[in-house]
Length: 214
Image (cartoon, rainbow, N blue to C red; front, side, top):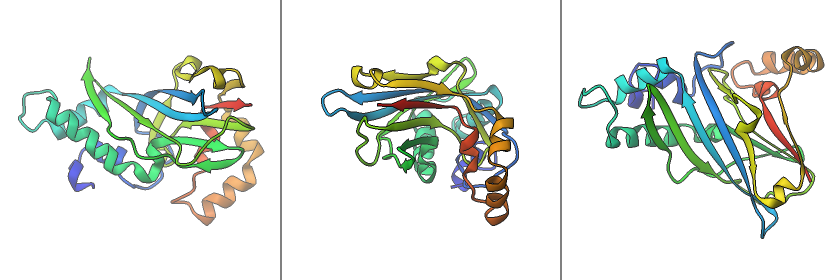
């Protein structure tokens, strides 16, 4: 996989590398959580990611095969295919829980990629891998468990519910306070680091999320 992305920064986003202390890539995210109003359950999650200028430029350098200084349609498609092939084990940075149980997502059919105003954009849809009835407490978010990529929601409106059924549930956007998370989870965070410093997913405690209670 790293060979497919050469040695530039793109390899960092899509690789299975070491968890690091702070992010090196920055992206603004939008997540639409869509309900099936007939089946009364979560239907799909629509992701939009916009990457920072520096990382976007590095991707152009990696995938601009004809050296014309931009990404042509076939080159954009290759970026999307690389991401699709590489982020499966991370559930495409999409995290959902059903009454405390982590629910995996199905791979997207395609990841659409565009390059506008010096920034790389990605659009794709994933679905829960098992039924998620609108019952109890559900959570939805986007985060990179390796903490190499900072996925940020610029406003609460970027975590958006679609569908009458899910909108009828109580819902709120939660932006955890890092100091409070550390204070409340000090022991478990310490144990997780020393037991598995390379593979812990405790970073999700710091991630912005939508909470839905039905």
